[in-house]
Length: 159
Image (cartoon, rainbow, N blue to C red; front, side, top):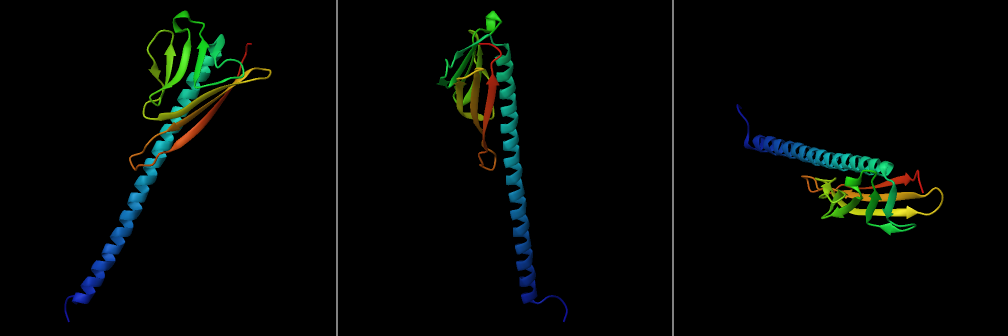
């Protein structure tokens, strides 16, 4: 007998199809994981950038206007030592965290990551301090939505 029988050919074809589908599943799973990790990295990088921007402005601030003593707000308003930048306001506009310097236009601090929540709590006690909570979210190409909540503590040098 020379060649393959029909049954052998069907068995080899079925095995090849099974192996191909397993490999395709592994590939798709790997791509989904990669997409999720990239989304998490975007959220983390945005979180670090926002934290640095807020802390930098708080270090320069001469006074925190909003929230008032022992209050909670979805806006942070601080006085700047530079008259043209006074006041500096951090707030959410259309799921984008913005910083407004004086009478200028809002500057977007988040671009490909949305901000779901921005809460500033002024804590009572001595020394006076703030707790800023920001919830970030992004959507990946695989449809996943990595979310992260960051808490930024700050203790005043003044007051």
